[in-house]
Amino acid sequence: MSLHGKRKEIYKYDAPWTVYAMSWSIRPDKRFRLALGSFVEEYNNKVQLVGLEEESSEFVCRNTFDHPYPTTKIMWIPDTKGVYPDLLATSGDYLRIWRVSDTETRLECLLNNNKNSDFCAPLTSFDWNEVDPNLLGTSSIDTTCTIWGLETGQVLGRVNLVSGHVKTQLIAHDKEVYDIAFSRAGGGRDMFASVGADGSVRMFDLRHLEHSTIIYEDPQHHPLLRLCWNKQDPNYLATMAMDGMEVVILDVRVPCTPVARLNNHRACVNGIAWAPHSSCHICTAADDHQALIWDIQQMPRAIDDPILAYTAEGEINNVQWACTQPDWIAICYNNCLEILRV
Image 1 (spheres, one colour):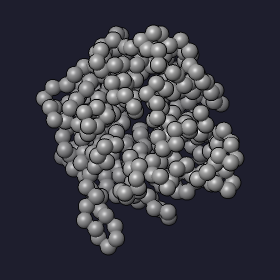
Image 2 (tube, helix red, strand yellow):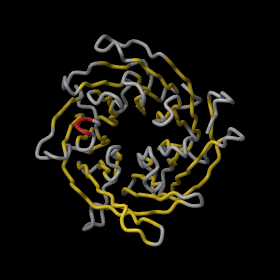
Image 3 (cartoon, one colour):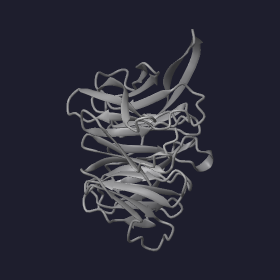
């Protein structure tokens, strides 16, 4: 899709509900497609798939489907070549894998780790491994992380059936785990990190799960809500504390000492996204209506100001940088999605 002829810098979509989770499609043939999850404080929630129409330059909703509880995260399968089925995953009460077609989205499998109990521990987040899209990792309030294996199994008719199994479950933290992310280090398949209510960032290796490494602990033991690995340099990651106004940049080679603190926001930070194409650019978004892009090249010298700032019309809940078209960032606030050319 060539939108460069029109040179619009911002495209906006109004959803029928508050937007929280969102994800850019990664397939090369579905460039300006995003999945949006509703945040409604009741059982019945929705996911919408929206796309930018080339002719009208407007977002249109291509598909809406029901989702129990709000999605804590949505991700498209990290399939840059378009060789896997067109799959979407959501976390909430469980991890669900959905198959998307032009006409409908249908539930392909529901991955439930507590088979022997009526109780389910909600999932706070998950990550889909970019090197091996048959691996996903979930984080839960029950202090555990679970690594799932997917099989796009035997072909029935013309459809691959997708199923999943638990590869490993581990107690990752002393309290709730709030986020999990695979690292690109060491081949990109086996290393991941998690953050949680105990205020620590911990690093794991699937080949040696008997121990973990604490990379950072919040000095006030505030819960850490998000972590995000640098897309180009696997030594760097960013994290943020609950109700915190700053983003902390860490270097795994120098544990426990932040290499930078990004603290221009005037209200609590809700989202972090590294540039897909550059090791020194990161976007942060917060309740102060601001999305800020920072250049962190001069670390460990202090980084005082962002290089770009965008002010939205509401508190920004989430930010996502499109990995297949790095000049576009998506933000959501209230019931709006906006994509911004950077």
